[in-house]
Image (cartoon, rainbow, N blue to C red; front, top):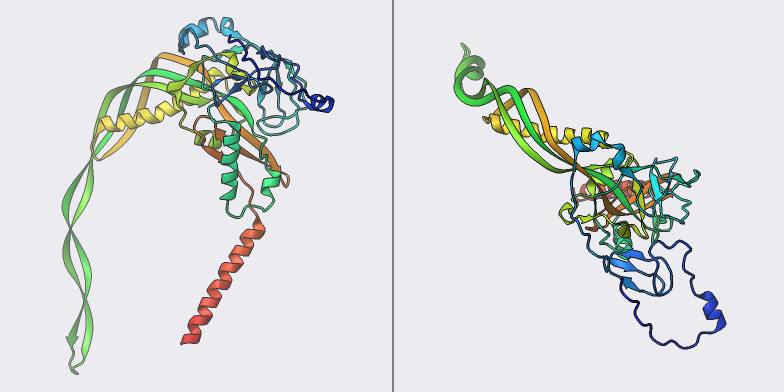
Length: 400
């Protein structure tokens, strides 16, 4: 631990000034040696920082690297691998979105950071869980996330004029979202058909009109069938079977059921190559969600993603111009997994009775979200377009 820096000499403060100074919070997981306040992880410096005296404390590198857990070994002693995250001994479940927030010790939460709903349930002792093996620490600061949001709102078409006053500007919550990653070596046997294009000449008949002169000297139309040829492309199918193998590395599955899948998927890509070995210090000052999608349920989703890729590999192995798969039988071996936490700045706000969400990837700054529409502005725009078209038509008629 670094020694606190010697503060510069300050002029004597008056009694009112001393009374107005913010007081350190009661809960101190990582206490500041200078003033005793809680040290929070600071995305800008990548260190623990005191919000009161600006003391910085470096987070020492972990002694071990991020490791994968063996699937078979884990299930032989699953209960023995479950425990609690240090400093997060209680949890509370949101009755609206279902998120399970792991509460920092001695910290009280009255609103769900994931959907903004009031938390009516009392905190309970945190259930044992698979500890995270890796974490992507926050890299984008709160101020940058807020500025990104303001820019996004300013570019919205047909947004209500008072959206900014309703949205959670300046009130972004930083939270770590749980994910599973899965590795698997796959061996697949497939059967199907290969289609090869070939061309052949086809004869067809077309109706042709011609004219004849009748007995009165008049031109009379007649029709006749004329034989013509054309080149057509056809498919010749062959039965095939074969085997493909492929290693899948870090298939990523969100382990939160509170996060809208369409939004969380749009936050990709995540720089998983920069995962840090998990340390509780990275969580300080941020929310952390407990996974609600179990390990087996997550692997089922990962297997579905792998299956789509495997089918593509089978079609590539079949070759030809077209492919049909009749059966695809895959064996998974050497399965490994890990529990990782990834950082998101989020804001949930209600506008006219409906909840909207904003998510910012706290590694890349990518923002996604849902937004309300001003139907009055849309209606006025449509009327304006109709009026403009009417004026153009009227002007065109005036020149005729």
